[in-house]
Length: 402
Ligand SMILES: NC(=O)c1ccc[n+]([C@@H]2O[C@H](COP(=O)([O-])OP(=O)(O)OC[C@H]3O[C@@H](n4cnc5c(N)ncnc54)[C@H](O)[C@@H]3O)[C@@H](O)[C@H]2O)c1
Image: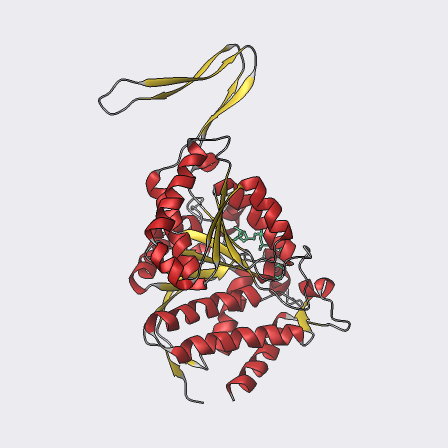
């Protein structure tokens, strides 16, 4: 079989534990036999990040900005236990956080849906993609426990100007207080990334805040989002994409009775909460993809789940594992399909779609990993191990490529 030539490079970020083992196998079995592709490889395993003082993470993010497309395996974000386990120099920051900051990106999480795995919400027919503004608000706040009577004020001191003061509360006793912020630049970047993504995926845009209550803070988000939508109105109109603004509570209610198929753009906390609700509502973590998009249209694809440590321990002991590889395969196909679109090479994009179809057909045909068995409506599902699933996908893929 002649390999399909991929015109420009794809950045590959390797990772940790069970997903690292599966990642290598996907590459060797489902990608490299079919594609002639220049993979710019970065080893983001926790030990290599440690050896390079995390420079490899920075380099991989910069390479993504240069080449435009990356695929990433799940990685360990070290906590105290991991520092001891691997003898690390320190508790390195989350690689995803570092990459997000360098790319100035927004995270989009999209479930992979199947006929035979019905969503928990009856009305959902198409995937709902959640875009989370991953900067600021309560994630970068200052908090205070008030333990005695006193006044809490909000003070803004303009550079070279007189301070402005607002009283937050005159405390008569104990209480709590929080100060948080966001920036016009970050909100606008978020809106830009959302519009770019909606155009790329041809999905309608939803955005919700609580601007009836928070007229200035939430109101600013609404205003800047609207400005970005207005700026790109011609592109959105040409693609037939609509923009709907809701109060956040209305957006939640509408989501429960809508058939899906839209991009739900959320402020930071809302996105944190709603992406987990949507993920669980559609079935399994192993079926949730995640893509980081920057405002200039650079993409990094990955699975939404972690390194599946529990399965890795079993794998290390030589025991059978039945780890779901679907989201990792879709990370590869997301990147390959996007590369094909950016390069104008239809055969590359078509390969990505065929591999995705081979995965879906394998599951719809009744062959699946253990996590999906309790969720399927099929009467006789065959629960296979990690490697048998990949073998089944490979044979479907080979059949579809002819
Ligand atoms: N994007 C990332 O790189 C990312 C995201 C989350 C966690 N992590 C890292 O992953 C490690 C493990 O974290 P965790 O256990 O909280 O998250 P996890 O996603 O690895 O596992 C959470 C639970 O879901 C199950 N699960 C997840 N993916 C599965 C799959 N593909 N097939 C079958 N079952 C699956 C696991 O068995 C476990 O019960 C941590 O070191 C964490 O830092 C990385």
